[in-house]
Length: 421
Image (cartoon, rainbow, N blue to C red):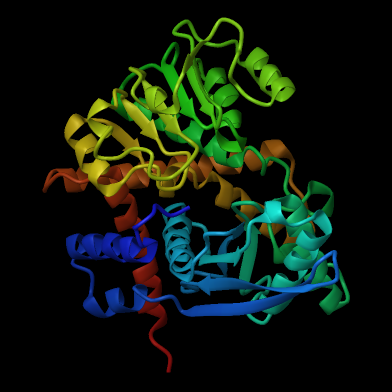
């Protein structure tokens, strides 16, 4: 969630302003891109298990549809705000544009702590939310997906709610569904696989061998946990991992299959035999070749950035590096693969799922992985080429290069389509 005291929408606008200035973007196009095209606020009466009615507040924001239908997740969290959802929808626009998939950005949220609800209350909330936002949702208009505290089950409820209104199954209305309801093979590991592809390509341009390269991963959930075996397959040595309980370190490298089995059995990484306990903060400052922050946003700041000691920083989480830290890492020579590129494997696989749903023709996991490899590799080098070109003029981050690519693509679409009427 957003850092306390930081307005995420103001941060998103500032990022756009900085890139627009560097690109010499037409002020009229900049003015259009600053604003979401649509923000919907809904109030959701839900009958609780004890018979009382509680009203929740929800949002769905569509930032842009210039390049195609809006795409973005729905989060259930007590700290959701309209400005946060607006910012996330804008960032989704850029993420989709970076990897070249034909989507604009959207995001949704409900102000709720899911832990306070029973499963049946959560289902009623999810269905009511989707029914209320369905006036702007459609398989050719806006395709939601899971985000914080929502999952494949939530998407199944969303799909069923929408399908009941239509009178037939509409699998393409959401992505991130269970596979037996039209979800895609390979979707679960797609974000992690995209990270591994980006790390591979970064190692190539930096001319160093990943065989034996040391890796530290902060966050051992879906993204970080699936990244470990994928990077190990490339020859990397996973020397440190962490989760909410803390971290572990072994300079010799972990036996990743044994570590995965231990985490599945014990519920966390702490206490893995042969490892030394470290804190999440210590993990970030280890001397490693590759650092993968895959947990929370804002963990790399101006305070700890001077102590970051890696060659490649691959952002598995959204927004793990603050703008001040970005500048410090640039001066230190750390190669940062920004979140808008590095973790875009998830939305890319969601695009594959949507395409499969529209066609009612499903691909194998191997086909999904092959297409993901092609798109992520192409996007990495397109961003890197901009970075190389622009660095000759004045220093910039890979994040700024990614934004330049994305903003240009969206601006071109707006300009060519024109302003209606």
